[in-house]
Amino acid sequence: MQLIEQITAYAAQYPTRNALVGLRGLETGGSTKVNSNSDLSYAQLFGALDALASGLQRQGIEVLGLFADNGPEWLLVDLACQQAGVTLVPLPGFFSAQQLEHTIRASGMQALLTDDCERFTPLEPVGEALGELAGLTLIEIPQATRVALPAETAKVTFTSGSTGTPRGVCLANETQYATAAALAQALVELGCARHLCLLPLATLLENVAGAYTCWLLGGTVIAPSLEKLGFHGSSQLDPAQLCRCIDECQPDSLILLPQILKLLVAQVRLGQWQAPPSLRFVAVGGGKVSPELLRQARTLGLPVFEGYGLSECGSVVALNLPGADCPGAAGRPLPHCEIRVCDGEVQVRGPRYLGYLGDSGVGSDMDGDWLATGDLGAIDKDGFLHITGRKKNLLISAFGRNISPEWVESEILLTPMLLQCVVIGDARPHCCALVFPLPGTEDAQVDRWIQAINERLPDYAQIRNWARLPAPLSFDDGLLTANGRPRRDAISHRYAESIETLYGESHAVL
Image (tube, one colour):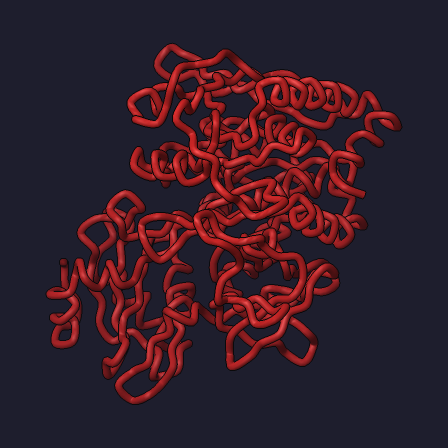
């Protein structure tokens, strides 16, 4: 059963059951930012999305942009677009003005909904406000040019590319539903009835694996503002505020990125937080997770399970589960897809994307029905998928040894005193690392930690020398991708001269 049909059925069967909950934002500087403080039952959710879908159809909108904070409004617009047959283009909050202008033109959107008009009024393609829908301002794009999107494109979601312009992935509703249905099938026995949306809703992982899956299970989706969750800007997070929000919401399930899991583990180890007993399942994905971090999290009361997916496949394709778990692996394939490893590269067959924004169709990453992911991996005898790194990131040492930098970085970043790490060593006799420590960390502390990690690594992957980064890597300076992964070529170019010194010194400050 498709998502809208399932919500309709629940509205008839359980009309008073909570479907969508919003929370009031934090008071800062004497002002309060309100996302929504109203709970919507399934009957109310059905009525609200039906009314909003009719409003979109009356406006004659075919492609709609959405730039808004997390909250019920965001999810209502998403659902209403599906019901009205409108293509939705979620705009991530980290986009620059140049990226916003490019996306507005490239997608052919005729209008956009936003809670932040100031971000758009200076942009050349943007016109006047047409009014309000779902509590958001509807802005006209007067010179919109019709774009030939792939047939059945329901959503254009953005994934990190190798350049400063993330790629728009065109998805059908059916592909998103297939992922959510497979996850609901896998999680039904856990009884997860309350899901807290912790990641930005413009992230496909959160709206498909989080909200959609919860609704297919008849549960309650909790959608606080990002400020309420402790997020500030595109990359700052207050872990204490995040923990307070989790305690207030008492969710059954969460989805985390590895760096957020690391912060939560640190809060527990410092005695500043304890995971609520309501938590039954915490999924972590979006990057390599150290098995040791997973073990630490579980020992401290966080029921964490690693998964793996990609936007081109509608999000999650493999997941560890209670009773089917292998720490360090990405899990077994979900029932809606197949996974194989060909020449060391992970390939997936099943529901997939329709093409990229601006492209004529699915590109050269397809081998028949199989999608080449660009990820390196292996499948063990028990059917668990192990991701070892990115194909394009593979380091080949001067002695011919293949080294996945993500593997070594995940080990080094186990300590809370190191916030960022980039391993280098392609065509070099050994590996070195660029690190950004927690302020106040002394060189001797970093030395001791790296020596301890080296004892767990084979000699060809050990870190012989390291250097401090002068400032944290960020998306804004072009050194991180949209989802926080290092842009290795850009980093190597930026710090080329200093990297050369690493191969003659024990450590350095760049």
